[in-house]
Amino acid sequence: MTVQVDDAGVGDLLFGAIIGAHRKETGEFHYDIIPVNYFQTPHFRKKLYLKKATELTLRLLQEMKLGDEEEIEICRSFVFDETREELFRKFGKEKVKTAIISGDAQHNVETAYLDEIRNLGYEPLPDRDEKRAGSFFHMLRWVKNDRTRLKYAKTGWPRLKRYIHLRQAPSDAGH
Image (cartoon, rainbow, N blue to C red):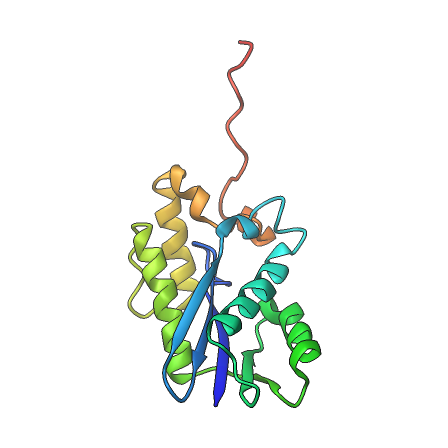
């Protein structure tokens, strides 16, 4: 049997990220969330999301009761850079393979992400996978239409400053 580990939402503006584990042969699926604050200042600069991805992956594999003979396929995403090394160390390079995750595993993790961003009140573009830039600007407009939504955005990305003014309004204290 094989457990596939994938992520969703890391490169999107909204929400945190989903880390999912899918057992290929049975369809069993578990996921957890890297909260959005890991992609905001001050955590983002420290790359704490890498440690969180590792922590969540190990917990998901434990929840799924990874068998001694089971292999692990893990996505090539940068969010798993530390996770892959930890899995190699813990389970051996024979058991852990870096892979392009597709099919049901990818569908499940993407669906979990879409459900989470819908819970914020955001409706994603139907063709968001084909139009990544369009999806980014659609999310950006949604945030700009109500500044209280900024708390849902991955504001740690340096390039975001080109598109949105992130500084807080000056305090009226003492005036």
